Image 1 (cartoon, helix red, strand yellow):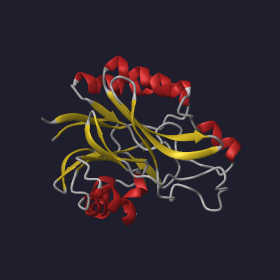
Image 2 (cartoon, one colour):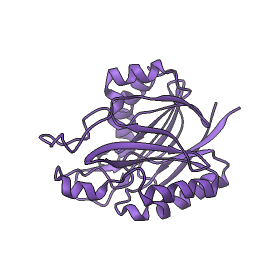
Image 3 (cartoon, helix red, strand yellow):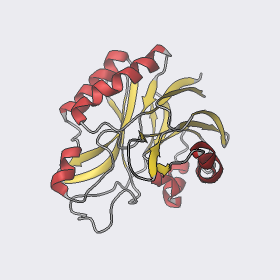
Image 4 (spheres, one colour):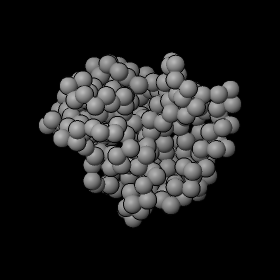
Length: 252
């Protein structure tokens, strides 16, 4: 039996207390289309603009038992829909780049901390910032799932371990910027995404991925959005870049 999932491309939620409210219309839309699970991008709560000043960055991070996450648990239970989302996690006095998968009853099914270090600025105080060391592939109510975050994809050791777990579906939430241009979609499809496809091919699994959107910036590069379902090393379905919304797919 196929399972229906959604992947959301949305802007960062910089005020964590607004996370549940920001998620709700997308969760509701996924529920209306009979999705069992919706995933949101990497660090969608708080963003990834780490300053290296722990006192400042700490305000962006959430503890697992925070009221914000409790509200998201309640949202998942209210719509009977699983929710997966990225956030900066505060554990003790250490910040991780994490992803939490909550089922339709509000319970945690998978908790992942990004293993690759490329999200961290140079010369950061590693007493307060860290990465995970586990790559879980678990049997969940959504099937056998594995998760990696953004740059984890380009670490061969991580991909090898993920593939060894034989996930039916690999979730790959991102927060990925790309140069803004009039032909950004073509540039992405022709010059960037082939590198992603080459890595996805090593997993021998369906892949569901989504990216954050952030176009209100003076920078030359923007978080360009997009969502993709990769099946048999081909794009089975996608949401265009710079498009806020959800991609709904049936995954076997």
